[in-house]
Length: 138
Image 1 (spheres, rainbow, N blue to C red):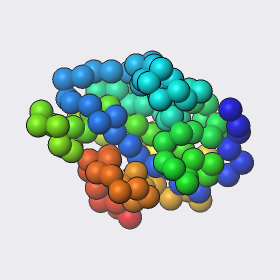
Image 2 (spheres, rainbow, N blue to C red):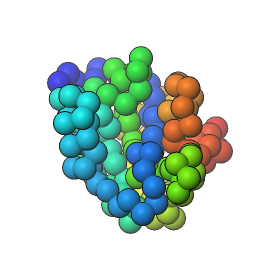
Image 3 (cartoon, rainbow, N blue to C red):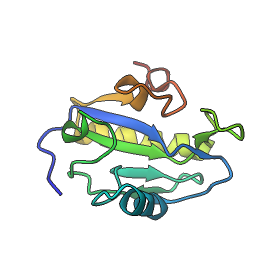
């Protein structure tokens, strides 16, 4: 895996799982490696339903989370984002939003020039199932 030499974006994702699926970074890593054939988990960070923040790929590593942006971005994934009907739904917990806020503050300290966006801002997807711009006040 290659090291990222710039960080222009912090891209927020969802795992596209239902609220009752309390998965972790290792579960997503297994999916990405075993089902997609990738070298590792695509995201740099994963935020579990209880707000636990887990490291995915190393913070300085190029991820596999947003085609065309991987070499210049950090990917943060919140577990959830799909309703019982299988459609996009903002079903994240308060603990996840608190953890995301703390992690974004940390990321902005490390990468002050980086723009915080949702995956939907660079791909034709509903991910992360909420309005990132409204969340960060952009």
